[in-house]
Length: 390
Image 1 (cartoon, rainbow, N blue to C red):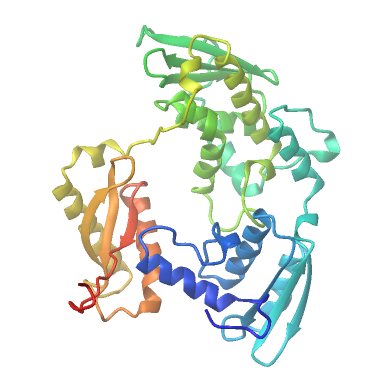
Image 2: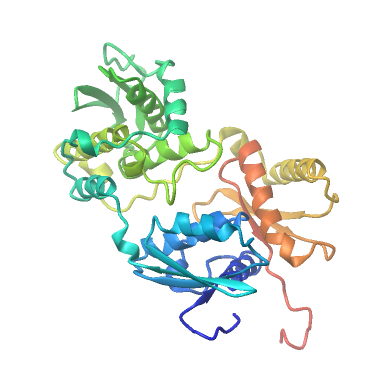
């Protein structure tokens, strides 16, 4: 990383290059060398990338941050835009020269909204209190539209909680929160949610969230539902939106009070399980990893490789790139044993600066069109000098 006259000032371009280099040359830990930025993932839009970098520093507990950005990276007209954005995170000041601008951000931890703090406090204590009217958090418009589109489906809304006699080993567990009732049918042998229904939800937005909640919970281990279901609902909705939904990192607590009700349901569910004979399913470590879709599992690995190559060819064709701009080498198991790690390599004709964005873009395409669990890796280059490899 290049040095700076002030060692406390980070150089944004070096951090960006550091991440991209790690993405191509390291199998794991693609983060930059600065410890407090381990959660940062750069964006090709540098304004978004810089904002997420500051947010990552804040999430790590930093109270101040200074970094330089070259005017070859951003336009001078972008400086005002960035200052306005970064003022939301702390006190922001700048120093400019002909070639660079240095951003100084102080009091990072002081720029929390009262609303977000109150909601977070409720969740951290696992005690959900009623939120005063002046503290209500409205759901962002894009997420609201997604929720309303599912509210009308009514697939899991029911008057009577009936198991339909499909599995006799199901245990019925009913949770009551804010006038809403949610019924979980849990297999007593493996702790898998066989079915889930709800009733008495009068709010259309909440109905939509419950429809998504039930859709995603079915067939999943109860431990996984307790730990990640609220986030899964949010991510499911985000996948159906375009553009930035909120400023900074998107979390359930800044996405509307309806998400707070989902959190209440999970807290009540956990408390109920701790008192009944199914407690064993929520003890220990959560090792559940949802498998890939059935069509992917039904293929042998040779067929998977052929299919991935076909989709890769289509991607390259659509992007007007050479057919061998990315080569698919192999598909290997991840830590859970699923064949979802796709290893790639690039020909010499692809410039090193183009590789990270190309790899991310192709992975996004494959996840959307083929299998969501696919992970793309660049095969680590081996030293071609036989003497050095001895």
